[in-house]
Length: 576
Image 1: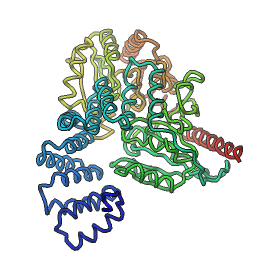
Image 2: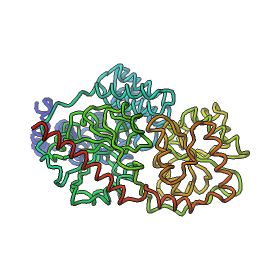
Image 3: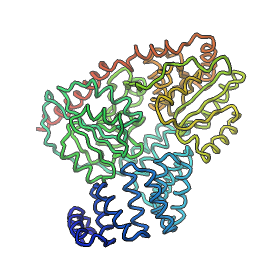
Image 4: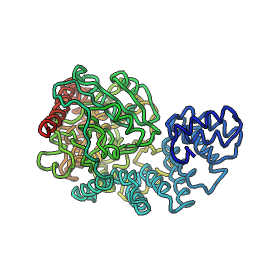
């Protein structure tokens, strides 16, 4: 009864006692596993579920739940095997196919993930979860227009499916045929859908001069782009002014996670916990400022921010647009990505242009020395960006770039580009854009960062994407001594390249039109071949730029945090 009424702690205690009395009773072990999963006690849940399967090895639901627990615990190989066992036992069980697809997607197998999610949707065409999984898989296969439609199908079935509404917004940023006004309206609709958090009084002392508790929430506090830009700020944040809490939300914890953990007073991992449990933990910690580093990217908790968990809430780093949520108070940007007066009306947050450039980059210690390009011949252009950012218009522009230099080649590298299902449709797109696929090298994920960066040794010029520019990929290319040509547009996502190029002192690589883009790329490639664009010099430009002046960037970030806090204190004083 307690389990049915979602009194999971009470149910787990009762079932644990029952399990001791009858350890071979599969039903008791299975229900104990369910309760422990809901409590986030995944190690104990795995033990209970394995006991249930030992007694009843053909229980598809137990295999499926075990697969979920194994995925949350980071054991993707066994997770996939458990889900495969579940669908073998019950081939028409939609949820098992959906969970298999999720595990395959986390394992970097987008083609197989899509096949599993399509099977889930075929088993139950009314399942919002199955259609949501299919949409995510399409996005991982870089089939963005199809993914947008698939997210729309989820919302037709379940209008309150906030995760699909959120990821649909992420996908919309990749499209080059949506105006920024329409894009803002879509984000505002998300805010309306999740609702405004009720007004709250917080116990936090409204003292503008005291030490502040600042919490950061992200699924990316690991070897990930977000961490590359966060770590320098945390390293140099003045600890006499700030007490730092880090909330990780992913099953992977690695060396980067450990370094970040050492820079914090408190570390929690929320992976596998439902929103109610996460909300309870955060409210108990009573942060003064809560910073979201995910936005509408995967595994975000924006619906919690809508409930207002802290006096001051800030969006930063992970997402190139507004959250659409009224209770997100601020968004940290710069005046190039978001010019004053131009971008402000398109945000529900107050924009804080806290520094000349909004990023503080820390290159990997595994970085090899900068290269000298691809050698004498041929000229090789490259893009290591998320291929979801590569629109058909971008491909046509790259076609012009390749045509401008006889015999030139293109190197494209990204996760999933070694998946046959994905590469087939990419080669079809290349041909439609008048690019000979034989002139293009498609490279998949490299296991170590040093090997990944070494791939830049064969690239003369990096080509940025549009309308969603690169950030980490741009910094990595520059650090490896490779010039980057970027096209500047009318929104944050398409102005990041301009901000980064300005920061490193190379505004001449910023194009204002596609024709300009092709001309600059051709010119820079020729300079590179003539030895007038040395890699070592470009790395030094990076070192001397604001991007790597970590103490200064951290001071500016700290000043912005203190100002935001002071604004809240002032409002409290006025209200009193």
